[in-house]
Amino acid sequence: MAAWSRGGLTALLLSQICRQLRRFDRRFNQKTGYFTGTRRTRSRPVGFPFLAVIISARAIGRIENRKGILRMQIFTEELQDGITRVILEGRMDIEGASAIDLKLNIIGGTKAVVLVDMQGVSYLASIGIGLLITVAKAIRNKGGKFAFFAPSPVVDKVLQNTGIYQVIPVHYELEPAIAAMK
Image: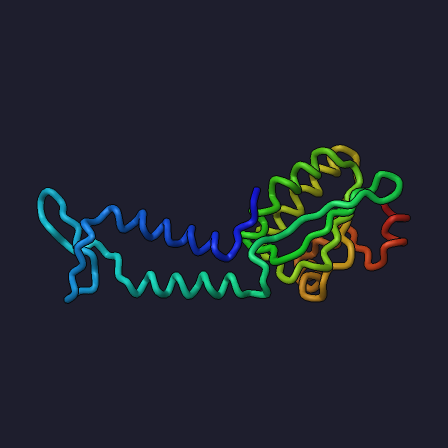
């Protein structure tokens, strides 16, 4: 899967707008600010104001400019004794969780001992928590081990508030984490 660049996301937005506009006659009613579509029965406003396009474009610009990270990134590293370290970076919101869902499930299905490094995760939403729990369950059902490693302070607080640490252990230093995962 290719990550969207700034130009790619803008091109995607413009192609979606153009696709929406093709449904109409391209006749713009200057009094109402809407495109007027022609139906076989009558002509009426069809709810596509320019203002919505401008607001959407500004929202996309804010998403692109947010710390330069558009998508969640995932990297893997093999440690000693068959331990797989999964390094996550970015925001684990609905977009971030969907970006790493398949890769994380493949890791959960193929690896027995997984240490998820969450130092680079700046935000964790409920959908991200659900994804992590699903992968942890899959690994535990195979008799494997799953743990968190060094979550950022914001993510640590979210995980503590959910009570997930009662089910999934967390480690803050690498050497004790490796010793506990053996």
